[in-house]
Image: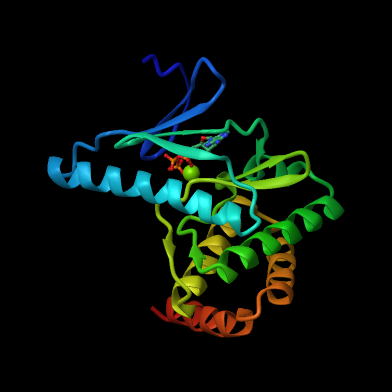
Length: 203
Ligand SMILES: Nc1ncnc2c1ncn2[C@@H]1O[C@H](COP(=O)(O)OP(=O)(O)OP(=O)(O)O)[C@@H](O)[C@H]1O
Ligand SMILES: [Mg+2]
């Protein structure tokens, strides 16, 4: 099988567009890992990614439909959109705030369904037709633990402040406002979030 044209090289995967227009994500060998462990990690993350993409979709979150095609290869819908990372800075304030609320709604739905994403960054969110598609679940897990969910939010805040200079505070405020409105356990998660922030600050 030809895998098609390479469209992206991520940190752990190469992404191709195949002849049918589907996206193929192949987790590649990492030379710095022991070969057996490397195999296990690539297989585990690929299986997990398909499972969580599916679980998230059943929770009402937009994700590409995906299937495992071999141990370290996933075939999924190609989302012909733009990364939130690349789009956010060019938007007007109202559109930025609306996007932030969509992110808040999405994370609320994830956590309500006990899904922790593990890499909530704006490069893993694709905008298409006014919807945000969430991708890259290979570091995720199924967890309803307050600590795990608070850590998920903490990573999101770090990603925002490092990539969206000047607007991250307002965007974050809108995300959290919506998150708190839409997720019943949000207050508890936010309290833990503040503890994590303090821990980091005084380290
Ligand atoms: N289904 C998809 N449709 C369109 N583009 C996609 C899709 N999946 C991934 N991409 C593009 O490829 C990039 C890398 O994909 P992904 O994040 O899944 O791989 P990764 O190796 O984990 O990358 P990174 O380590 O950079 O996060 C995404 O940021 C996105 O631009
Ligand atoms: Mg990614």
